Length: 324
Image (cartoon, rainbow, N blue to C red; front, side, top):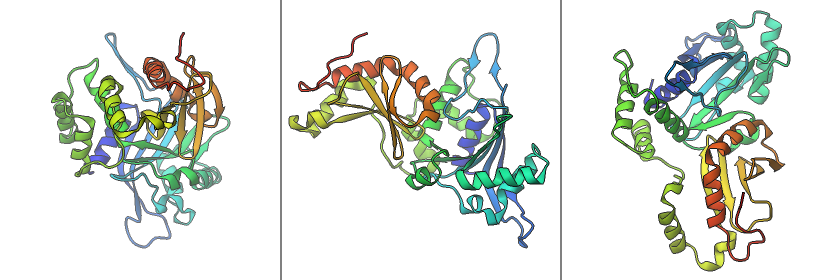
C-alpha cells in the first residue's frame, strides 16, 4: 500500500472496521488474472466499541453507520475523490464478487439485487435488517461529478482523516505506537508528537504540496480579520461569507448579510441546508441524511458559531448579534 491507502486503512481500523487492503477480484468472464482491485474492503458490526475504565475511544460519526453490518468498498485517491469504473460498471461483476467473498449473503438472487442497487446509487440498505453495502471515496478534494451521480456516496477528505486520526492517537492514550505496528503508522505518530501541522502531514502522505483550500482556524480570529480587511474593500462586507469547517465533504459557512433567526449553512455538492445556531434545528433544505453528523459538529462548535456570527454582522444586517 502507498501512504494514502495506509492512512485510510488505519482510519477504518480505528473506527472498528475489519479491513482487507488491495482486494483483488477474478470475475468468471475474465481470462487474465487480477482483473480489478479495491483499495480497501472494510466491514464493521454494530456493537463495535473500544473502551476501558480510564477512557473511551470515540468513533467518527461522519464515517460510521450504526447498523448490524456495514460493508464498505473504499476507493482511495491522492487527489480528487473518484470511483473506479471497474466498480461502477455492472458488466464487470466486481460488486457481486466482493459480496460472495464477504459471505454475509448466500442467495445468488439476493446478491444480484444488492449489487444492482449499489451499481445504480452507490449504496444498498436492507429495509428489514438494516445491513448496508456502500461505496466510500477518500481523496484530497471533492468530486462534483460523483456528488451529482452518486449523492449518497460519502466523499471523505484526507485532511479530515488526518485530523481525526491525530485526535485518536494523541488523546486519552498517549502511547502513539506499538512495536508490532507497521512503519507508516509509527512514523505518523511521531509526526503528530513533533507538532507537524495537518497540511505538512498531508504533503508527506501524498508526496507533494496539498491542493485545495485550507481553512483558517478561528483560534486566530484577529489574524483572519486583518487578512480579510486587506483583501476586501468595506463595500463588500455585506456580501462576505466565512467558511468555518469542512466535515468530510460537508462545508459549513456563516454569511454576513442574513435574515433571522441566526443560522449557519451547510452545503454538500449542489445541496444546501440552513440550521439555527441556537439548537441546530434544520430550517430548510436537504441533507437530512447527514443531520446526525451536522448535529454532532454543532454540539462541539456552537461557541465558534456564535462568536463568528456576532463578529461578522455588518451595520446593515437585518438581524443583530446572537444572544442566548
